[in-house]
Image 1 (cartoon, rainbow, N blue to C red):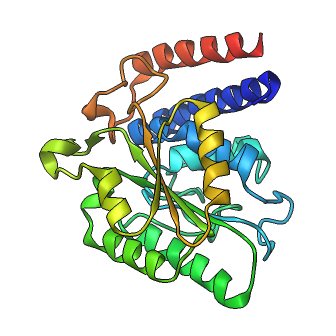
Image 2 (cartoon, rainbow, N blue to C red):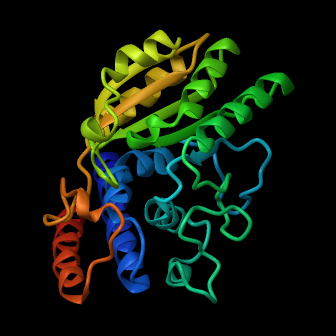
Amino acid sequence: MEKTKLQQLKLQAARARLLGVQMVHDAASGHPGGSLSCMDVLTDLYFSQMRIDPKNPADPDRDRFVMSKGHCSPALYPVLALRGFFPVEDLKMFRRIDGHMSGHVEMRHVPGVDMSTGSLGQGISVAVGMALGAKQKGRDFRVYAILGDGELAEGQVWEAMMAANKYHLDNLCACVDVNGLQIDGATKDVMPTEPLDQKFEAFGWHVIKIDGHDFEQIEAAYAEAAATKGQPTMILAKTVKGKGVSFMENQVGWHGKAPNDEQFEQARQELEAAIKELEG
């Protein structure tokens, strides 16, 4: 990947992280940990991979994205804003009673959101339906989704995996944000799901394992997914929960907690320093 593009992707992800943390702080509610961990994969999707037009968010030929771990709106909303679907100032409406940006991703009032999600396991099922619909109608758009590794304890996820394999949905590419933590603790303790690669392969998926914070690996994985025919692709992205904010990283307590004023100030300083360094 050319250096300029790599720097731009890193910069957009850093900006999105700052916006996401500020949203949660200002609302005094939200899920920062898992939003920060999937931000790089999500940024790459919207700024490098997906066929989308922010001026025409309902374009029937657009690629679709489903945030299956729907509580991670502090990841999706900032990326959509930076991509131009709506003004960044709208993020101030997050989780406000008089606002239009729900805590879980919502499609009726937020431009660019393709599916309302929140009940874990249902998002990936909808993504399978979208991909199947495209196949049946002879459409060439692709469908992308991000799941949490804690979400994989939902049986509905595995029903979706079987269906995607049965219908050879090579227009579907899902990604598991493997940060190892969920609301109640370490995923390996709450409900062990490893070895994920072997399980998804057994369900008929093409599996790619990457560092979910390395944009060159992310880019290569999505290119490989697009070139894979006859089966859906699952990207297993190893990530750090709370990535980018030192005191949040790998701390389960930041799954669904807002930083106070002092904590936000530290997070802001760290994230702004990262942005300044990337701006060069």
